[in-house]
Image 1: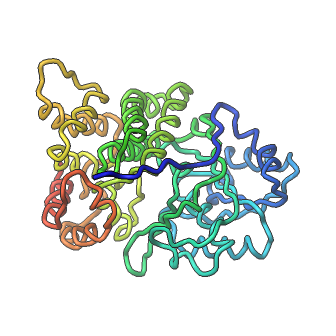
Image 2: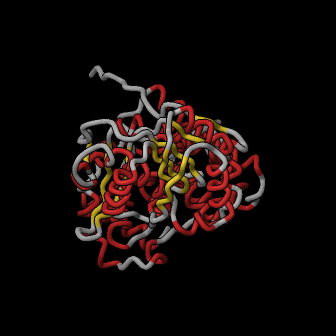
Image 3: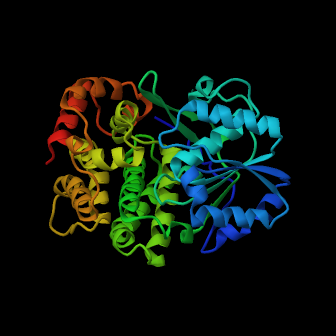
Length: 388
């Protein structure tokens, strides 16, 4: 069947050590006079957060602080930020931090110019009009949120997760400064890096992948396999931090165009039911879903294994494809990423309802390279509960 391929994304990207110093000039070039600065409270009080605030203070654009972001944010947080943005007549939104912060900042941008609440726009292409321009400054190498058209929220009342998905959420500018990731401790470096690996593998093996996402995503797999251990164990090594931020960006570009699969579908209930951060949930579920998925696309999973260092000579395509999960497992073990659901306090009796909830994460389930049923999801969860 013929398929029309759409290639779109963040309008402009700046990458390099010290790139955050260009923030005032870039805001001025956008014609901004008053911006909203979105961060979480902890980051705003750390040296890195204070540095960003000092850089902004030296420029001509006034920055209104919104330091309310929490992990796995609720949609009401974006509503609150958008209302403040309207009241204060800001003309630009800056997100500085990890994926939760960047998602909230993007949502504030569109909500400030569209009527209604964040919940009204959870779904695909429901946003009616452009929002305020947004500038994303990631401080982790994981989510790739600076490249995507998605803002994900946790609805704790219904114990569900969902995203606002609209081209109007694409940022106008992403500033990627690897120096901002140097202070990230080993554990968050590990699980955010595994989040990026999840994005890279799922966008590469997605049923919606194409020639552009194949190139971006497979290169991201290779870069992460070669750099994540170094970023975890030698966190002050700028080379590894540069490579991981580049890989996270490439993986984000890939997932924005081709989407993700069952790892994300099975990770969402972990966040919705138990507030497990998205990166940790993805990291844990990735090898177990790969064990299930590889027969659905042996050519691509074989390529993933080779990109992660598996020797190819004299081996069948299926044998290589099966090794993709093993390579991911070894990487997770080496860097201390979580490997068993029971170690995160997930009760075994929650598995059936998690499996049912995962099947409602429709787009990733339909995008998965191997058809996924509730029974299969439950079996994967049980393996993840016990460990390999």
